[in-house]
Length: 326
Ligand code: UT7
Image (tube, rainbow, N blue to C red; front, top):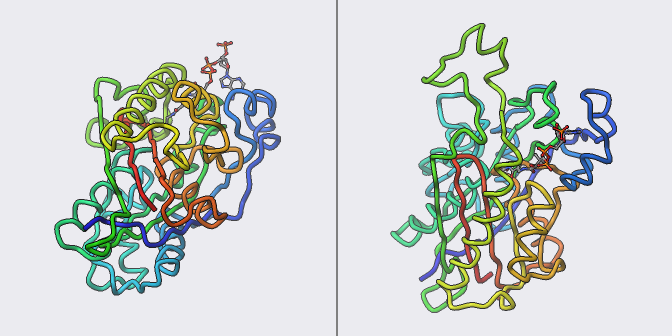
């Protein structure tokens, strides 16, 4: 028996922030952002709209697509680095809002890889007896942006994507074929929110120095991203005895179109087999893959039997992939 994705959903806040608007906030240009990243605009959560609010909308859409109600869920996993509060887990707020009365709930902290890590956890739980696990990548990155730092504030956006992972039929070989998770903490300082945790608790100083915001060494991150995304894709293909050309659709983490182009060229994947939506959303961290996946499903780019590969990369550093027979 395999675990299968039986429904996907997503949600993006209504407010759009364009490159032209950012030009009036920091010393940047639409041309620089488009050429260096591929991003044209991103969504920004409304006042009072938090991570769990986005997650609930995406989760409801995924449940509807799966034909399930919240009461059917055994577990809810929310992958996020921008939860509503340090405590409790955002997944518990989602569990309450959805009315998932019998579901366990916890968050997964693996930054941009969070959705693929959550998929791997859900896969393991379903294989060990759970029936339905709702996994959600949800981020309000705008809440941890330094809106005076052009190195980061042009890159990120808000949104949520979700998938229901369910037990498949015993004789059906479709489903999650494999997941591959990696980390290397020696790169922990490349992407970090340095203040506000137990290492440097919140204080007037941390706020004055904007230590509650994301700091990123983009160029160094870029190089590791290209290398590890290629490596983990090759590992995933080899583990399943598949060739690059067998894959119908590649759904990668949406950080930078130049990272994706470099990885696809190295692997030999043609552009029409790659889902790219970062032009409209920017980098939504853990939400990026499930939003792209949901859009691909709803556009008919993924059909029953399609071979879909996911690939993610992010803070930690972490990198991860999954191969799915839809
Ligand atoms: O999802 C988590 C994983 N994150 C990533 O994968 C991000 C990976 N990194 C990247 O996407 C790219 O490195 C960036 C888009 C962040 C930066 O692009 P880059 O080509 O690596 O640029 P750079 O950092 O080498 O900077 C080039 C120049 C610098 O100016 P000088 O020092 O050459 O004069 C920057 O100050 O571009 C400047 N710059 C900007 N200029 C206009 C940096 N940000 C901006 C900006 N607008 N927003």
